[in-house]
Length: 121
Image 1 (cartoon, rainbow, N blue to C red):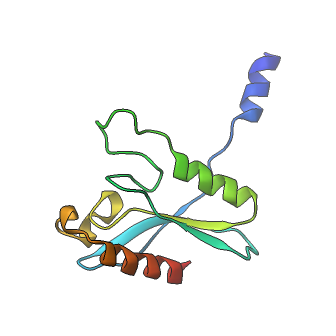
Image 2: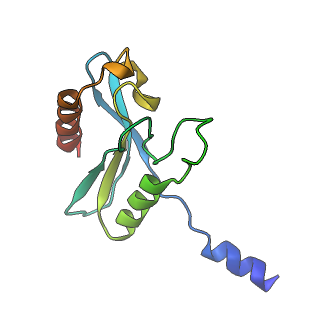
């Protein structure tokens, strides 16, 4: 019983993230923000190439890409006193309405989105 209690105490509780959005080209872009009271810094976490969501995972059915790396990074940043926003890229996941064809996304559009997220941060 003592070992079980210790495991429960050591289990990390997920940070409280709020879903937020900014305008996209065809509809809203969506992300999750972790606010930190008194934070002097905020970081926008932008997923890498391909269909990677705001948590660092691939789409359902894509084997091997279920790591939650971006979510865990945001939680560690919160512990260090840094606020963060994790985003879904235009046309994907929570930002599907932002772009009708995700294959039509271009780097200049992603740069525009990044500027919008930095302004929101």
